[in-house]
Length: 84
Image (cartoon, rainbow, N blue to C red; front, side, top):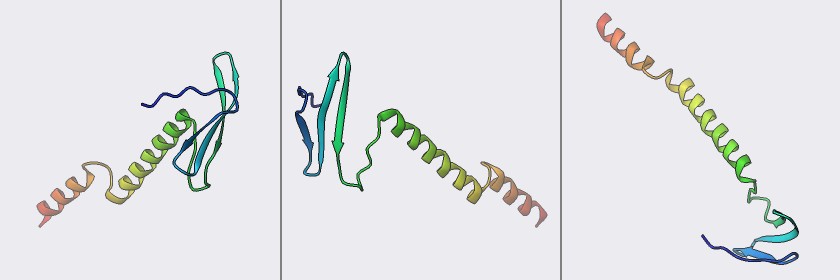
């Protein structure tokens, strides 16, 4: 992890397109301004985690719809073999 010290109105560049500016410092809170291209998503970490969790759940639901509940396909195949 890279740790940098910055003062108010100073900035940090990430690559060529992302700039993080220290807008304000009050006590233990730092306000940041972030300039980034529209195709770069920027989220607070707790929001990012929530989005990832929702994405994972959505993907899992899609797989369940496609393949059925876990074990259901295997039971169906077993019953089909017994009938044959």
